[in-house]
Image (tube, rainbow, N blue to C red):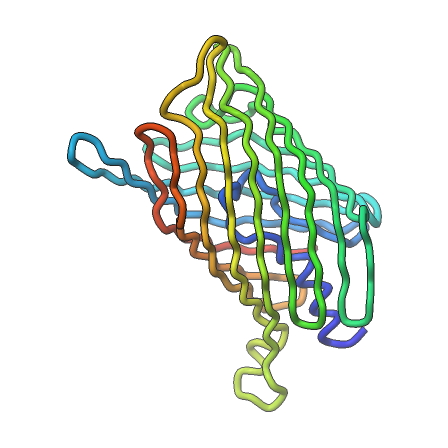
Length: 277
């Protein structure tokens, strides 16, 4: 395998969506390797503002998920994601579990590959009272990625079906998507920075959208819930080693069509790593 094609394969493994409207809901990482473990963690700084009675206030939330992905067979892997949230208070949010099949479509060619994968997940109400929905949710994904030489395109869509909690409230079903073209940059052999960046740097531009239904009680919808958000998220992924990625992204909201009086997202930051053991 050539140097470029080897790095391309590693990039496909590690460069699923960096930041998205469903950063916690989306799968935390993917691996194409049998019996390998991928660890992903990041800190996402989310900023929001809300306007009431002529005054504007803001708040900042820090989200720190830990995702473990294990390849149980050549085309199958399982993922567990446990997010920790720090806001006015702090605590664990609900844990998610995924099973993924990697080869609905599987095409390999010199210098590139194309895959379409399916994933099913469950969100369990394991979080603390402040950060838990109190009910199970079921998630389904289709994940597409293609690579040719140094150019990549990644996309996924996800549907989340919520159930009612003990108080008879559902948070509302949601639909999300990610679209992300990316490019792998490799330094020239004789340049001063070729040793530092010898494994490559990926530039990526993500478009992340989420449409969420209003939350509901048993009898009616809750007004100040639900809506549509669209984020444009430029980012970089740096490979200090072939099996390690350091990632940085800046999610910028471009559409914030929320129902009622709601905190609206502002530009944020995500920084983290992915490591294949």
